[in-house]
Image (tube, rainbow, N blue to C red; front, side):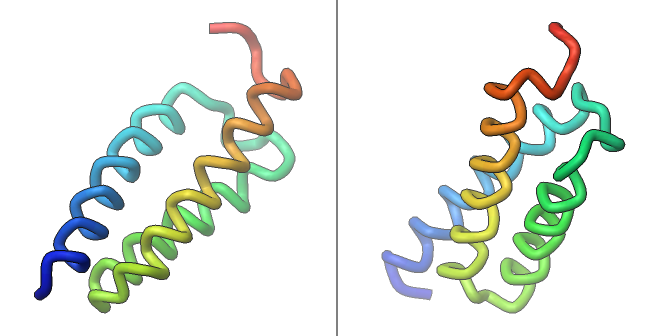
Amino acid sequence: MNETQRKLKTETEKWLEKLENRIQKRDSSVEQMENVEAYRSDTYHFLEEEDFIRAWEAVIYAWGILETLERLGKFEKD
């Protein structure tokens, strides 16, 4: 694994952990949460395959959708 791959893997795992923590506090029945869950799942798959670019993309897509849902007020206030 080269330095770029190592950095991508590390950053992806960092953001995946943050995503996991944030998802735990959210109602999974909210519309579009299935997309967050799908991209989260894809992230794990791509990490296993050592496809670190796609893993990074997937976790960032999941994060972006989750933040959008939060900003649109789709969840009850914490």
